[in-house]
Figure 1 (cartoon, rainbow, N blue to C red):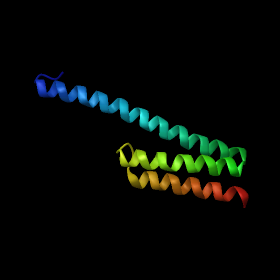
Figure 2: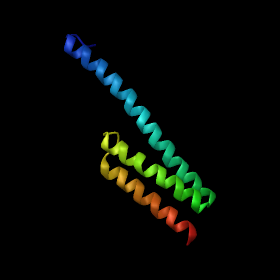
Figure 3: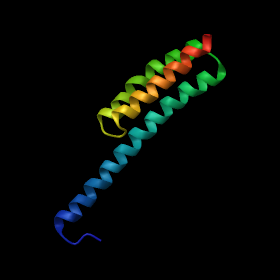
Figure 4: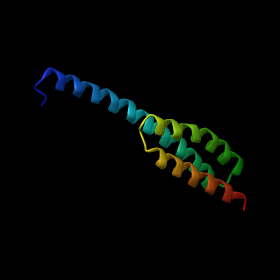
Length: 88
């Protein structure tokens, strides 16, 4: 348990940031899931639309520090490759 007032304040700040980060991470995962569901259904146009919506969300998560920027780029790249492969 925190003893000093600064440690108590830090604990409160961490709790607030954790809530915000949880929300952002969940939002990012929801967008990615929509792309994966569209890929699984084989609907290329829906997958492309979902990917266009998911891409800025992934990059926003990276900018905000929820995920590393290379992780976000890798996810976008892999999703884009899977969407592209639907028509082939």
